[in-house]
Length: 115
Image (cartoon, rainbow, N blue to C red):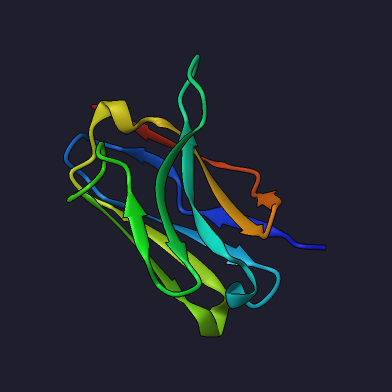
């Protein structure tokens, strides 16, 4: 059974940085795409950044230039380096991955940006 485990969330001041990690229970190249999504209170889950098996990366306009997605296949982990954080980045961040039409989700990690 595929498992995705996120870590690295927390409370940070505006302008600060955090790095999220998503460790998969299997080789990350088994997935067509892996990525990060977020859901703020009262809002729908939205894409933040994804990376596909070929290395193509996509960012939402809201985070472009501030967040960087990367992966380390030896440890089956995808990262999200977040910089210049804003209060509007506050959300639960989820790691997601798909194998064809089957999607898998982690349990989520809370990121709170506040002074």
